[in-house]
Length: 374
Image: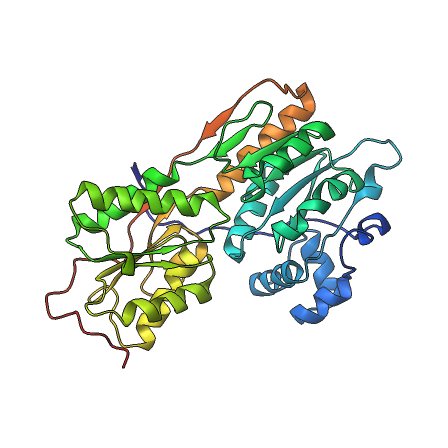
């Protein structure tokens, strides 16, 4: 495991253009005017954000990107390649409710595409189970040269089989299983979560709560497995009351906090499956007069920008999301240049790192146990 100092993540958006009539038949019609209305930005500003142009305030840029995500807006630039019948578009599909995750995958992909002839087309997927049947049709109608899949799409065998048959090369971010003809970029989620739990145990904690992520994401199960493994190795009994279901959203962290704070005794530490939920725990602790980290330690996972914005800043396990997207894009470019070997099995493993900040410390001396929720 690597120990690294905190970092300031430089975030930037994707560059895409207007939808085509072909795509509008497949997905609900949403226009740039709708994105402008929801974000409170002008149409010109929305266009500049979607085309990755400079001189847009970061907060406005994020509002526009979040509005596009909520509206399931799918900009398209298929017309660029019609004349030469050569596609210069790479599609990136993602379903993750954390806006920080979306920004990081965009940043990584765009960094690799800088100076290349290819451009990035983002596909925010609101509900993969409902969207699944449309994906191949959208990929074909959009004229994509290659595809990058993030969870849960990167772990769906039916979708991968359809992509194999389509002939469109694709790379998987956080694919759990190795697959011929389907390169993947991973970190060891289970080991990373085990190391984070051991860090809390090393601080002296015994009552360590865990907030699970959306079960459709295999990383959620892998991180829970690492948590359980560390407890067992340390001889700490597993307590199901200390495990709360979440969905990777800030609001699910708030909801989980209410359940945990009502326990008697309360946990002395909370390990959240991502930083958004960890930030929700910190916010709830402030609201209920629980001092972080004096009375409650809180740690997260990802090392998103949010982890270094809230106070106290969140100790977290860095998942190099931008680097994973950068690597996936690099592999796609190589596949497009040198050909796609459908028999090759390739896995690229990137390092995780424990980022120690101010949200975790030794457990409080008794009595800390009583609930602060009447």
